[in-house]
Image 1: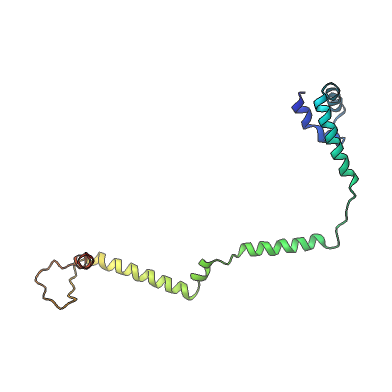
Image 2: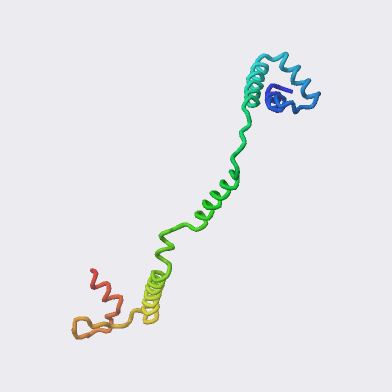
Length: 142
């Protein structure tokens, strides 16, 4: 094995989890490679410090309290309080739908009449039949 493969086995070796053949091969490499040997000593030393730390027993019902808090957070994520929900719920939803229906109605009205209905807003005599809704609209904004 090369240095990279040897280094991948350092933690398993520190835990004494290697097969005898693998451990012998790695030990032989560590004897001949000072760089890998120095690195393994650091890894083994750090791993040894983990065994010095004594295990702490969690307080009673610790896991249950954590699970309850996670459930509460999960519920708040499932039902976000969005402005969209407020605006398009209940009364506001009816207003939005009514407005949309009105706009669709206007569009259909102008589509069906093809803009040929004449309006006499100012009481002027209409001498031409070309006073379509579209022309009146454009005349008022030009």
